[in-house]
Length: 113
Ligand SMILES: [Zn+2]
Image: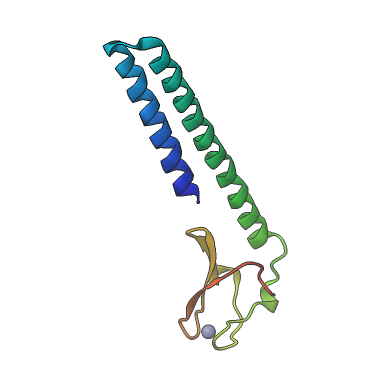
């Protein structure tokens, strides 16, 4: 989703720049107007995409540092107790690496501990 927004924003901006450059070859005013509109739309899309990223990171940090009670965390595979070092946030998800059975899995949506 984020990647797509950046891709679309970048593409819009690129086409906008091409239109502005093409304005030098004649038919200047409509090409500059179209170019500026596309460039503006591209910046707008990229800005929306950028706004969503820090929000997700903040939520993940709160999830890990806030309500986590280590004594209630257990491995899904072997039931061994997990400490905070076994949990990590990477690639936009919360991952558990069990030190007892070596199982590594992602916790999706809300943690149930
Ligand atoms: Zn385990």
